[in-house]
Length: 236
Ligand SMILES: Nc1ncnc2c1ncn2[C@@H]1O[C@H](COP(=O)(O)OP(=O)(O)OP(=O)(O)O)[C@@H](O)[C@H]1O
Image (cartoon, rainbow, N blue to C red):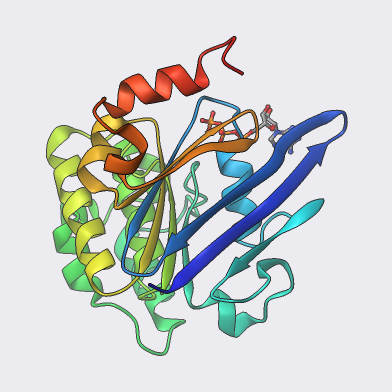
């Protein structure tokens, strides 16, 4: 098993607040790793450190063996990123944007195939700012995958999607994993984690409180029960 992402004793401080407080977990190539945790637990901050968008105040993150903060451009082209708020330019149209992004990579994915798989063809001529939240999500996901990354970070990829779109996204995530990519997904959905994840990380108050396969983390219980026990006020 190749370790694609390693988070070790990570610390991230914003003024007096420790958003990430000794976080440690790992994600392997060819696996979907789901990171679950309450609002404000430090998931996005950790993922942004792994994407090279934030600099850790302590501990370390390695992605494909490299420190993402000081990584060269060649590293960044091996890593796909889907940000929680999309980060898409509002004035472009989805198809044009995806073709442009594809042109930045030496060996991009088939844009037409991605567009069709995610149902983007139905709104490919509408400017991004006029798209619904779920439509923007789909374009963001396509943008994260268009470079055929070896590691991809998906921040709540199915939040706000209708049930059909959710199934389409799950299928695409599984296919991406099956190409050997390490897929790291943050989610608030137990169903998503149970259906999709090979490896689960539960975080709370800036640190990982459980990690392993769904079966290892849950034993005889449900993921939901374990989650509530580990993250309930008072258990912390
Ligand atoms: N730039 C920042 N400045 C100050 N505080 C921040 C900053 N970014 C994050 N925080 C704080 O750090 C904590 C962790 O935030 P983070 O976004 O990582 O949580 P999360 O687990 O992703 O939450 P959610 O499930 O709501 O997306 C929160 O209390 C948040 O307010």
